[in-house]
Image (cartoon, rainbow, N blue to C red; front, side, top):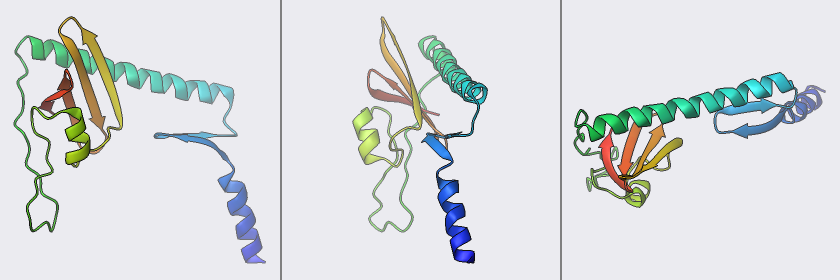
Length: 139
């Protein structure tokens, strides 16, 4: 009897999620107002990232921000000492395929007359900045 009750609970609990999108959990029982508030929060976070990228761009172009050094990272227990850290000058593809950073949690892009500036944000690691698809800063 306990098993049947537990199974019924798990079936109904697993169906209470309509969508899991990135870090946002949207329940089927959410009101329209709550869904709207969650969407507004997502838009506000995107705007904040865009403002941060603009501030970085202004500092970079005015010489107030300089490139940080490349990082050297080894996997724990790796006897061959293969470096998996990001290096200034790497392309985006190299960062994706040859470093531990991998795919970003979110990103922002600014295009102007100087070219493209993109930031890749990672919840656990930090931020990588690319200018015209090449790594220029690790933050």
